[in-house]
Length: 287
Length: 304
Image (cartoon, rainbow over all chains, first blue to last red; front, top):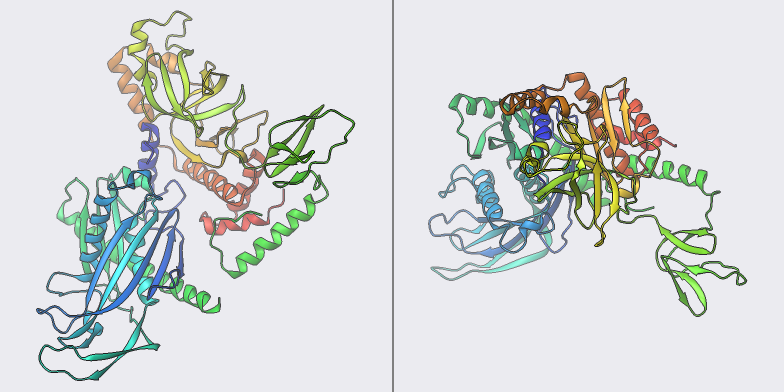
């Protein structure tokens, strides 16, 4: 990331104060979002999202596994993010690990809820096959291809698109088993269940620069931020997760204000994303 | 035509195809036989003695091209000029660069080239305007003139032994650039012209097209008055500097700056050469529409 001169920093901050950012957007406007689904044919579901110069790919793979003893009626989902050196030279080797862990944890918190599974954005009980014995394990992987700010929002949107593209094979339990034995299963190659993503939340990140908040910051604007809040909100307007980044402290009233701004923005974002995702799926079906 | 890095839906793709065909039909009359791709034979008449220049090689007694480009002939020299190449600086080019290092008696600038350019302290006007020998005090005060990450406009003075550039910024129109934004475009889109400094009077915007692909769009600044400013002592100087920078750019000028910057972005995505006329045309077209880049895709209908 190149540095910015004092004059450029003032220009960016002045623009945010006057509600006119460097590329002409208002404070609450997203960059144009382009969605492409089915980019990885070997995965159960995948999607590529481009927001301006930020590009991320998400893929979903499903495997059969055992549910944990504490929650026998729920499947398991694991989210990992990898920052590719293609995005930034500093991500080479172990350089990108900090950012990857931070993004993975934030995504898990926003989409999966707490350890007890409460408040999860993704409905885990739909992943169970035989209670206590077999469930689906979803491995969601995100790859950052190009980084120009606002990675968390892009990854959240990519995961939502990938999940809506996911087809989980239908499983028939052929032999009932007792005790600890694993029942035999027959995984069909033909029939697929589409994952229901109407409840999956989107993530809206609000970056605080000076006294104003902006949505969808570019990496130049992010370098000027004092703090940022990422809220994951679902279609009903409920908050599924909350993450704060950045070194500056925020007054609690400001946080409530930021959350209500995020709720307002998330409605438009959800509608926009849904239309883009369905357009992308239609494109994919044609080709 | 090369791949354009835009995601377009069906109707936009069709419009882009139509516009590209229109452009090609206008230009197909002009020197279509002069463009070659790799391993094409270059037609030469065997009587003349030919000097084989860049981008050519001899194979089986024929001269073939090694790069894709246009064949140029100058007297006896035949060479192939490639269309998309790295920035090739020449003496007298206007360059916009960013300071990466303050070294002994010089500043090192990053200019989108394979090496950093050097701006010597002796190639800068001193604050008090007198032509004198640079002393040690001047060296210590280099940071007051330019710091790290400052954006500077300068001119190429000559090449050094190792191929890196030496710059000079002696005239009043060169110097530090503030109150604006820096855009990066592929360098081959900025052709060499008479004027690289454009002052758009009716919008109050400065547009500097650096030959290295860095384009500065900012609020108009009159010729630098660093002379007057630095004649004051240090504390006053700090105050004046900070007030000058932190004066907010007025909203109307900011709108124009953003619109010009977006025009440049769209033109560079579509692969147009950046000249003042094209940028202004894109600007005027977009003035009738909204400012979002999506709407500015309509400028693909522009045939210049």
